[in-house]
Image (cartoon, rainbow, N blue to C red; front, side, top):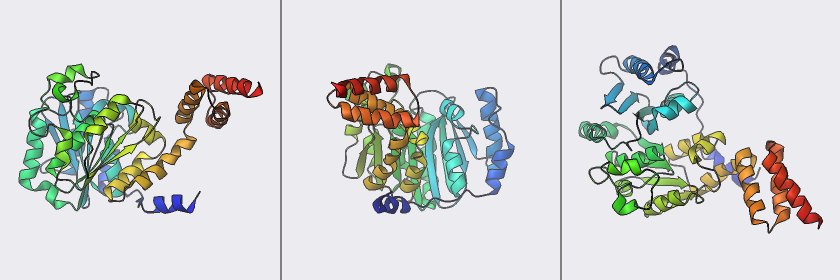
Length: 334
């Protein structure tokens, strides 16, 4: 491992997990065994009551969304997540932002969606307007908004509520307003939503922030086109090639997402740090398989395909990888 690699990673503080009263409360209420979404939300409401017995840390936001606030230090992590993703990916079925912040002693605000409505319901805007009026975000030294895809859109859009905040968004949409992004036909059902009113066009909502980082896979053409709409002097667009359909899940699998969030929250995320974290791809079987198949498809560099296939097979066995290896060996033996 190079000295530069070490130096880049050492700029990020990696706090040890803390044993706080909040973590003990969270452990006592079992979300993983909830049989239905309604039961899961009810138990999350119980956690909210334990976090704030007076006002409650859990807030329903209309029929399709909810918020969970947990008090910590003067760093606030605001995440936008879907309940389906939380229950599918998180081992303890708790919001990722809640768990990540809790382990670091940070404060957290998790905005959760029951349906893919891009957080455009009026209750969401009303909630953030209320926080602005109450001066809620003014009480924190650092505020980071995070989300991926639809949730990345919301992280960018609602970051306007916290002047001087930082945003980390993975493959976000800039808008689904068909007059601007009519070329994105993946979410036709969402075009009926209002993307023109308050907090509507996500790139314009970043103007009052400290900076934003937009991560996308350039092989995903529509994600790349949305990333182009975010280009502004204070926005850093970071390319994450060949991570597949779900970039955020790939980053998490590689162990790169958590330190990326830490670096962004600490004001230490830079292109150099990002590319250092992306070196974890070299040991990720899914990435290596995609790289090998792409080399094989080009067919012009069998030696490169051979090297990629051997390295990938050292990580995980695959019939497709062995086929690429065999084909490259035959090309080189001619």
